[in-house]
Image 1 (tube, one colour):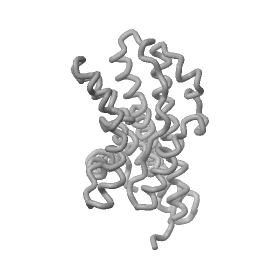
Image 2 (tube, rainbow, N blue to C red):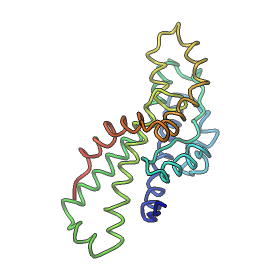
Image 3 (cartoon, rainbow, N blue to C red):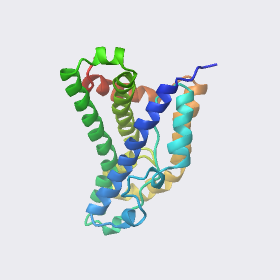
Image 4 (cartoon, one colour):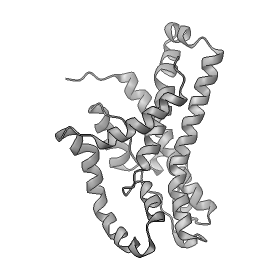
Length: 227
């Protein structure tokens, strides 16, 4: 039986909540700035995590991935918006779709910046050895926060509904094929769940994990200091 690493679980939750809340607020803020008040009226421009939680994508799936020892990522309730408010609906849809991953990238860069400043000004190794708070802060929480934001960013850029990458795909899709694409979207979620949960466990082939290794983990190694 796999032992439970309580500090890992606690730090993952603390890092995951603001990462996903600010991701959704990014969508809502972009839609609002483009003239659509829908998300704001439904409370999605809020720091309250309860306004953004999707039972499966925010709670069940991350816990399952954590138990299985896989990278922890997920999604929240899709932010409601009405493209009819946008001056250019296709361009507006793309901007709203990219705003969430952009919020994660910004958080990852801020977290890495804090880590670099601390690494250059503080004896982090000595502090971590002598103080458990610094050990959890620099050894667990800060790197997890940066990594989870990168995982969320690249994961949500996959062109599979309900993920944000689907809006990017729709932007570049020829107009004449859009009705067909929107019809196919209703079948995308089961395919998405198969790729994320079923295929890695039963076929021992993890395409999503391979993609995240090449993208999120490599970028983490580049921007986060090794102290």
